Image (cartoon, rainbow, N blue to C red; front, top):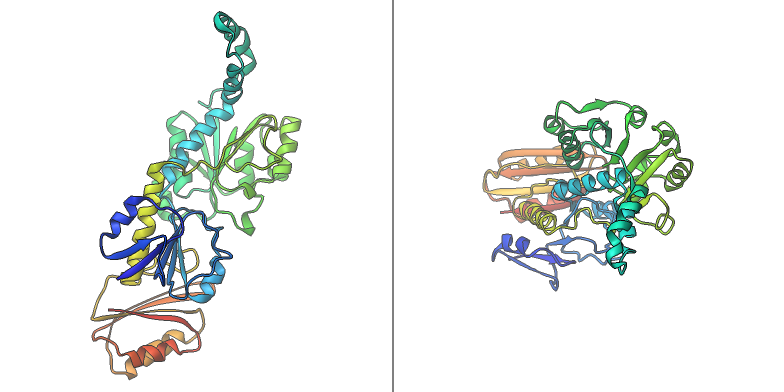
Length: 387
């Protein structure tokens, strides 16, 4: 029986998907795989038995992805599983950035105890909280992945004009994007055209401070920025300056910092993007499905450190090989199999950066001797037989 260790409490619905075929829990020795949400794995002693780690969520900052790649441990995430939850929060943030809802709520709370005077005070005080409508305004969406597409399409239905920017827009995502969304090839053009901007890209060194002083200066006076993706995607010093000089009217973020909390015209939320039972269920189910497919079939889908590589099972035996992306490795693998007298039924190989992955189906069950020889090849990191 295969074993999956949960390093966080995971939705019960995910465990139900495993039925009785897996041992699953928070106290598992020698697990085949790990499922995690927020657990910090950088200082965690990963058991040598672990073949894969699945993050029930999109971000993998809590996992040493590069280190695990060197060990041949596949790291999965669950892109799109929490997309609707984040989309709904973005729409709420969009409304909060146009209307002074937060300030109005806080002020109304101060009227407790005023008795019959409350109604009169509300009518005289509401003029301090005048806001603006979003209908007819332009929303700029940076990043047209699973979340960005939902946000863009939803904004159109609210009567907004929408401009999108994504230099890595896939055909799959483009087909799901409403044709009324204007896709620009220039981030600066998006910033200058938008009354509101929302960002939905993964955080990495190359995307740090995607929104910065240079492109904020190109925005319309009184524009607003929404960041429910990652705090580091925006230069908060530049945002604070723009709020101070009136270039920006609002900054709404799901990633509070000490500097931002309590700052005028900044609305900070406690990282609520995926905090719904529906999103947690979706992420957990997707993570479990990814682990099952990898452990049982060797298929890789939605990995952040290895290429996507999958194929239907053929033949009597399946060998999966994680190896360095170097010349002649595939030839060496097939040479071992051929010399051992086995017929290859199907062979699929994909590479990504420094690493590659191969799936080999053989007509007959392959011997331990041949597998050991493949595992011993200089560029091979990990070799596994799935019968």
